[in-house]
Length: 272
Image (cartoon, rainbow, N blue to C red):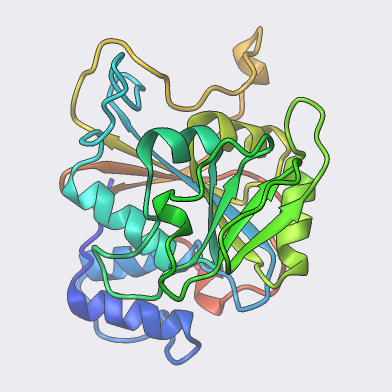
């Protein structure tokens, strides 16, 4: 396992690389700093490049909340900081309506420096109230994807798409690209992430595991079960220590566009 040391200097350099003003391949860095740049560099795409990633935080026993729905402290402080860094490196963050209703998230990068991504909620039936925090006016693009014809607050972009049992993930990705959002992160909930996995749309999946046992409650990823282990997905994986959490960086096999940052082609640095 590699220990990723995301110092302020390292994060500033990563943001500069995201803006096309620096390269992550060169420089005099400590091993932990180099591992941090490998971790975040591997999931960055060049501007305008289509790529979809996902992030989920869970307990040792694979839970994302208690049976009463308490999910506030599943991830430790370093796991939460990682999530906010991921937000800062993408064009838009996507959540399903169930997550938006239960957690009322802000989907900002308030724990780290960087620019807030566009906020996207998938709300086929228009259940999310218009006073939800992710609709708050703060200069960031706000988008709702729905089937119904429900009015939304001024400035909120509405994309209407048809559905069967759910709105098609490929249709969602295509619609967002048409409005200029190419590098996407699916943040939650677990069922929404699973739908994008099953549609083979994910290039990378980050699973942050915190050292706690919940015992019962909603599971993390809930993809379709397999009858035999030979049928199970076995993504190529790098493991990073993030202080309070352990991160599994999984290559999911979706076609990743060739136009990626040069440092994203480099293998992660193995320590020890």
